[in-house]
Length: 245
Image (cartoon, rainbow, N blue to C red):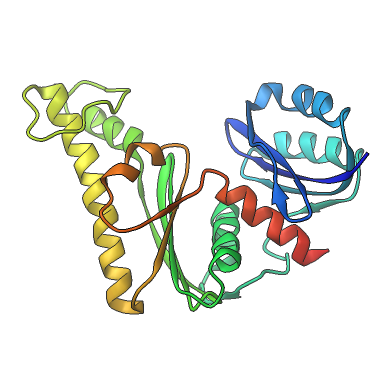
């Protein structure tokens, strides 16, 4: 039986994981947190583990539970701001930098070595991160994702409804619901283009990498050549694991 590496990304609601072998990632799995340990136990019965990396943005209680389980299965590298990174940190507050952003930047550094890149992660929030010359993290931006935008308009207005889908991608909207969806969709799409433009004005030509659970809504509308990778965060974690081993 081949020895595999286990890459685990524990979020607030979902646990995402995959196996790696000789630098190549396998199928990505995503399960609700309440099913995490049961699912991992079943999957680990089928393989022999070499090394493990865990990144977590979940609660301390949930993190301890998953970390304890994984430590019973093998040697675990628990990603933190003390981990040895692939890139040079140019952020003024590195201890506050999200671990998912660290993973995404690490992936970009390996995929495009020596090349500047902009990493866009579209999820609950949308993050934009700049890696200069493939080596130095310069910082980025954080904006609300589409669900947050719908919720804020509902919260701060007496008459605007709370919408839960983004299935209307045209302008102009011919109803209040369509207008809300159009505003959020094209607002985010325009924002993406503006951050690409701002990055290129400051750093020259850049590679644009896009990931995140909601990326599929927007990739078709982006005019610049992009590299969409749903496993980008897991790829970065795998590279950090190999680097620290």
